[in-house]
Every structure is written in C-alpha cells, then in structure tokens.
Image (cartoon, rainbow, N blue to C red; front, side, top):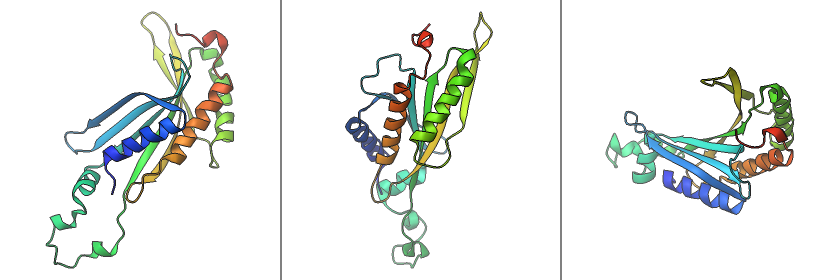
Length: 196
C-alpha cells in the first residue's frame, strides 16, 4: 500500500507533467482521530495572479491507512501470525477520495446567474461522466456594503486506489481540461477581471 507522502508526490509529479502548478498546499492531522488531511490549490501554468479561476484538490487519509502503509496489514494487532485469519483471503482495499473543487471569484452579483449557466455548460462538455456537478455560490457581507456574491464552486470526486498504484492521471487531466476551458471561455466579465 502506498503512503500519504507517496500520494502527494504523485500529485506533484502529475501536475508538473500536465501544465498545472500548485500555488498553495496544506497538510494537517486531526489530533483526536489521527486522520490526516491534504489540500492544494492548483492553477494552470502561465495563468497570472490573482488566480480568479482555480481548482482545490483535497483528500482525507484515515489513521488506518497510515498504519497499514507503514507497517502492513493490521490483522497482526489482533492475533498472532500463525492463527488463521479470514482477512488473509481478502485482497487489501484502500481508496483515497480525491475531492476536486473548481472555484471562480465572482464579484458581480448581477452576472452570477449568467456565469453559473456558462460554467455548467462548460462542465457538461468537459467532464467525462454523465452529470455535471451542482454549482454553488457563496455570499459575503462586507462591513460597509450589502451582501454580495463572492465565489462560485463546483465539486467532483475521484476514488483513487492506493494499494497497488497511485494513478492520479484521470483527476489531473480533468483539472487541466476544466481550467483550460474556463479560462479560454473568458467566463469572468472583463470589468470584473481585476481585483478590487
């Protein structure tokens, strides 16, 4: 079984090979469950700041995966090696649920519906499965202004087997296709293209 660090290295290598750049990443551990978590913000190489269109990739890594990828199967924690165990008849299973969240900074509430429809159309053409993800808008209230739309997001999830090989290529290819299509479509209005 591959380790948490090997999955992250595979992500870095795949991103570099496909024209993507990781601009921010975080890794943390839950001190109660000992679950590890990873999050990276990904943009296309050549896309200049402020990265108004980007992807956020994240995945949890259960404590059991850490133990098994470091020390082997956990059966030996419950019985001696000479005892017959039903787990020996099963193939090991470990899947990392890779969550990809596409983010667009939307600063024009009046254009939000149009932007949402355009994003949905692009996702339906770009994604390799039948249904496009739901589009969500988040809103924020400024200290001196009214409530305003500030972000659009759409999520997809890839289950990646981490027992034999770590094949992140389909997920990385999806990120590349979606970000390329969103940037090429000029999805954000021109007057909304620079930060406030």
